[in-house]
Image (cartoon, rainbow, N blue to C red):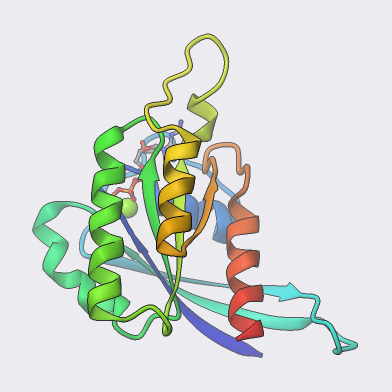
Amino acid sequence: MLQFKLVLLGDSSVGKSSIVHRFVKDSFDELRESTIGAAFLSQTIKIKAEEQEEDVVIKFEIWDTAGQERYKSLAPMYYRNANAALVVYDLTQKDSLVKARSWVEELKNKVGDEDLVIFLVGNKLDLCEGEEDLRAVDTSEAKAYAEEQNLLFTEVSAKTGQGVKEVFRSIGEKLYAS
Ligand code: GTP
Ligand code: MG
């Protein structure tokens, strides 16, 4: 079994805890309370690896940080030894992408590119469809930024679960391969 440490970063209320709960417990809470300090959860997945007959078991140790500004100084404790970071923004809040960019910059300055897989994740995709489409950040804009910065990128919904498992699977495969 391989163990990897993950950290979630991003503005308050973008849905970091909701993504982790969808992944770990397969549940969603409309009235989730804002995280205080940070929360720790773990989950294992199996991935198919070439050259191996049996599936590879990967255990993720996940630090879900608090996005509120007053906890910002705690973040380095959680990202320092991380193997991967999910930098989350809210597809319906333009400012949250600005905040995500500043996290990416901080990670690149403090941790370094080669040591860390960074995944840019746009959340609340369920609010970006139908007549009441609340999308405020274009996919193409975030995608271009991610490509320029060499980040993995996707859009998900913690509410419906769309895309959430795939994020962790891609991280597992990428870390396993490296
Ligand atoms: P902090 O802990 O303060 O940093 O916030 P957070 O990033 O952990 O956000 P949290 O998961 O607590 O979610 C904030 C609010 O957004 C909650 O009311 C969630 O129910 C809601 N929410 C989270 N993900 C989604 C989603 O995919 N779709 C919709 N519609 N709402 C979501
Ligand atoms: Mg939270």
